Amino acid sequence: MTAPRKIIVKVGTSTLTGGTRRLSPRLMLELVRQIAQLHEEGHRVVLVTSGAMSAGREKLNWPDLHPALPVKQMLASVGQAVLMQRYSDLFSYFSITVSQILLTRGDIANRTGYLNARDTLLTLLAHRILPIINENDTIATEEIRVGDNDNLSALVANLIDADLLILLTDIDGLYTADPRSDPAATLMHTVPRIDEAVFARAGGTGSALGTGGMITKLQAAQLAGRSGTTTVIAPGARPDVIAAVVRGEQIGTTFLPPTTRKESRKRWLLSEKAVGALRVDAGAVRQVTERGASLLPVGVLAVEGEFERGEPVNIAAPGGECVAIGLSNYAAAEARRLVGLQSATIMETLGYTWGDEIIHRDNLVLL
Image 1 (cartoon, rainbow, N blue to C red):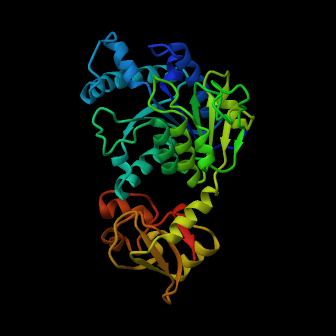
Image 2 (cartoon, rainbow, N blue to C red):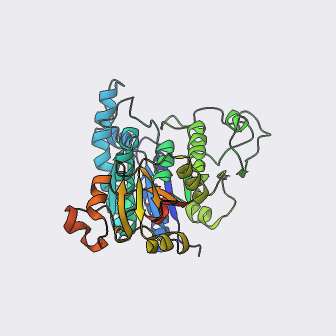
Image 3 (cartoon, rainbow, N blue to C red):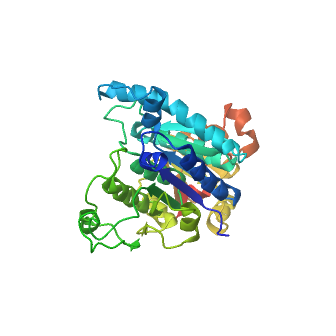
């Protein structure tokens, strides 16, 4: 069995319907069974799913409606309830609790929204609850939409620092040419780098049932790769495809990230300009630099500058030299109230808590 990982499974409408007009209970059950197997093995799994509008059309008996945006939003609103109820029922057979999260690009475009979404997802996973994510088509406008669940799944991969993103689709993967028109086209099993030549191979838009084609899957793989996440495009109809991908079998097309997750985060943090500083005692310096620990409020001597939650700040030794940079879990005004306190008193002091750490070790880079 492979070591537990954070895995995102994205499934499109065509995979859920089997190419028909209605969601297939059999196909949905098979998808849930495979995800439940990962969950039972200790992996932390997020499901990004399409299918709400198809479920809405089916619920309303496929009405002949004008394809205006409000009509599509109505179908998504009706169908999302149906879709979640089916998932909830199916996962309950495996004693798995699910949660619903509806996102738009606008929800995670600013630092506060990004951190709130990240904290919620990581807390759900820590409590062994399986998040089911879809774009919030009911209220999304063109300005804040992601537009397709391929790219939404890549944004979620960035949110939770996912190890693996699996894009299940109705094709085998990326070919050297369009296999529908070129009999000599062969499947590309591994793509070490996504460049213009790779995009040129993508061809058409894919299934008429969904909003994403091969182009959006390449965009998603590229976006996820920048965060150090490996992406696999795989055929959703293949038996036990998810387990096979997680085992590392040569299925579909694997897109290797250009950097590791740790290195990607380190480079990003080092490129950020600190907007404040936390002066810490010698004990905190040792904990952070020698033991790889998080920075706790008990080790903070003073807070310098003004910053918001999630902004980069320097960690300064008693003499003033900077030893690290990291993202603060607390705004400057909050951090000042926590100086020198034990983590157990954060809730009592503030009336709420963003965690025991002023800066978590996962959001900290040594200088």
